[in-house]
Image 1 (tube, chains in turn brown, red):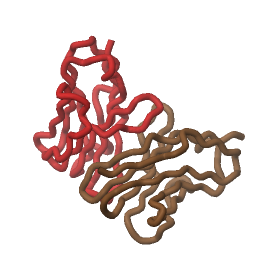
Image 2 (cartoon, rainbow over the protein chains, first blue to last red):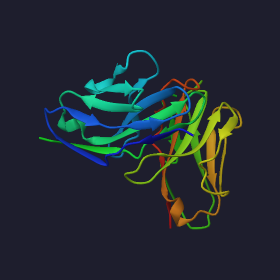
Image 3 (tube, rainbow over the protein chains, first blue to last red):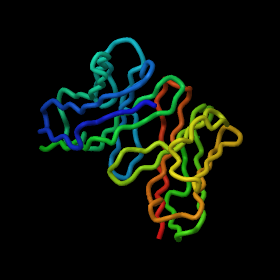
Image 4 (cartoon, rainbow over the protein chains, first blue to last red):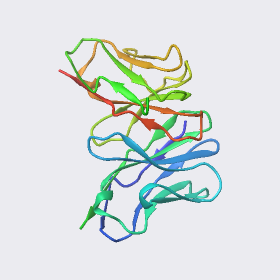
Length: 112
Length: 114
């Protein structure tokens, strides 16, 4: 079955600095990759996805992610972090018709 | 409806009680997922439906957990003889197509077993 690893439990950045939240995946076929964000007491919200095509995908709120097949990674990035970006971020992978698996999550804290 | 709806939002059950959690996916969505999420953790996969067919139930933690989606729309997750370790938020999500579309999540049902 497919799986996702998010190696960092916590990422801290200063407001205005670039941020990266890491994700690596394991699938047997072509991966469909997703990033979701969860704010306190809120449901998971979709940010962006990679299905095929350009390795750099752009999503909501200025976030982007880079798909790297050789490194089996799909890191989430943003050029300039905002305090309001502070939340839990989850990477997810789907393999063809299979179910969708999530990483353990990374808590992003952006300090003023 | 406009989004995925889950009910109840909160459920307190006495240990040993049976509970049923309901999920109304977005109309026309083919795939439906159930996840269990502990506080501050990632959603743990429970089971997956494609229309009315339950294609994967490998994540159900015990035979006390049962899910159904008889007409390919509304789904119910049933937990029999609840235990304290069942306390968690249960999330439902649906996707329009089988593979390449993003999931839309409900707000979840917070189950507390006392």
